[in-house]
Length: 265
Image 1 (tube, rainbow, N blue to C red):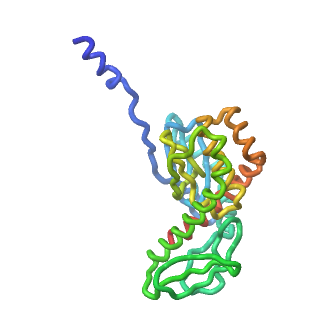
Image 2: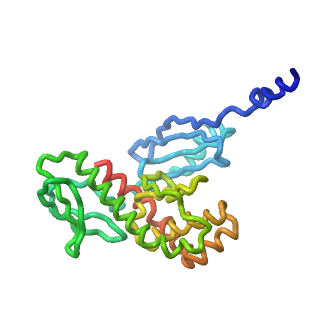
Image 3: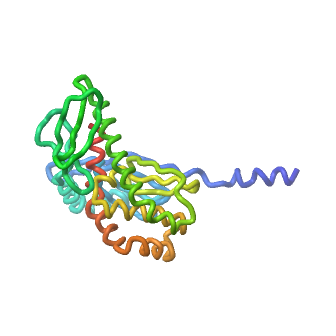
């Protein structure tokens, strides 16, 4: 009987699941009022204010009071205003409009002139003149967006397929599978079962940065951590990994925003 009760004790005293709590707070910046997403995150260690393509976000640790969060927001209102202004002024990729001349398509750090052509089925290909979007006359926006996503996925898989063979001999095993998806903050991940996930936005940036992320995730097959030993493995395969990391700090937000605008139409 005592043994049976002992099995239930851990369930009774276990900590409740960590749940993110979200609401919004409005803040006046000059003559405008902006909405800030307020998130209480049990994993957070300090109050944090950030800005990305979705807007402003205030993150509070579990024990931080709402008053402390509002005070932090007011103290950093000038920084928030400058970040929002800078973000709005960035040259973000507008959604594609069918048959509109003068459009371009981002790919591998370049802007390819976009040409439209009537066709029997939707597809995109490239040549020395730029990108060519072939689209049936009756195809709607969903078909256009599917073709665009298929194009970027095929280009990203081609890049990975070109780089991967030179790294495989030094790895204990190959990745089990590759998934390409739109990621909100990460650029890549490696699951315990060996599944590698890469952000589809990587194919929009410069190829050396994309290859660095691939190397980073492959090295997790050797070291499942971010220890000095892990970074030594990365450095052996990508000596300029710090430069590529700086590139993402400077350009990463814009790359993710470009992809979201393109794929959301």
